[in-house]
Amino acid sequence: MTSLLQFARHRIDDSVRDLLDKEISERVSESRLDSDLDDAILAGIGAYALSRHLPGDVLQSIQVFTAAARHALVLSNLPAQDFPDTPVTGFGDEPELAVTNALHLGLIRLIGCTPFAVSYENDGHLIRNVVPNPAACGTTSSWGADSEFFWHSDNPHQPFGKPGSDPRLYAPPYLTFYAIRNEEEVPTEIAALDDVVVRLDEDTRQILRTAEFEVGAPDSNDGEAIGPLRHTAVLEPDGTGRHRARYDRGTTRGVTVRARAALDRWSDALTTIPAAELVLDTGDFMIFDNHRVLHRRKAFAPRPDATARWLRRCYAA
Image (cartoon, rainbow, N blue to C red; front, side):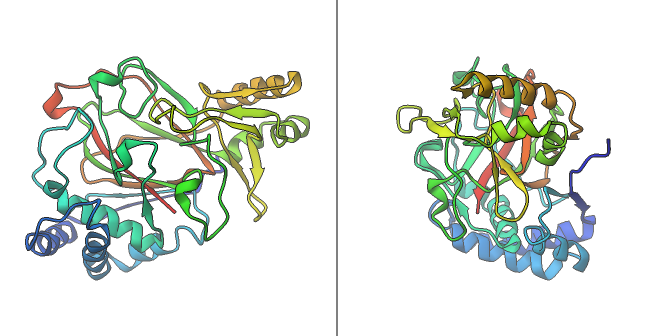
């Protein structure tokens, strides 16, 4: 069965990369810009430079990403500034990463989205350092490494929001990443929800659309700050004829006998779906639709702290 994943991938030339690096570096050097306090300024600097220097076809692909309802997009060979050591504690000096933040937030703006943070995760900071934090050993957290992430969506314990709503109250529509280093070559796998749905019989799909499930918060959230979502569905229509899903194997359970059986069939289908295995490298940007894409990451052995795998993640709506 052919994969239904709609995935765009682009790589810019070294000359474009160097022009972006030069222009953005000059602009952010004028002051210390923090991603939490100065996100709009950083986004403006990045979006301006990207609009000037990206090839027309790449720029168009980015700008129509949401309207075209693509599942995912990756842009490679973006500037790589002089990076500090990987902040394995989870937090570092944000102004040190002004060039990277301008590119990351500028791309989110060009896509037509707004970056946002949530109060119940990451101490409310806008950008999360996805790093192997020793304090998260044994947990299925974005700060972990030794536990496998099965197929899931982020923050599935939150309801889906309506267009124009405050995104902080709902499951994030989009996840974005900027890769700092990944010498371990750990892949991020993504799969289209459509490829799961077509492998289910109609009776199973119907049960998954009923409010017979409970979804708790993942390990990366402050579980005491927000409780589970009860009387909810795993699958929901999104109003455009497509499905959206909330799911995390560790926190999703059926509250009826038929719901538990349907969830077992859903889990079985997840073992057969086609997936894109993406090894993000330094200077790679990725965005995917968190409502229509499931993702996972296998357990891995990180390099020493200073050079351990480091991605930067930001929610967008």
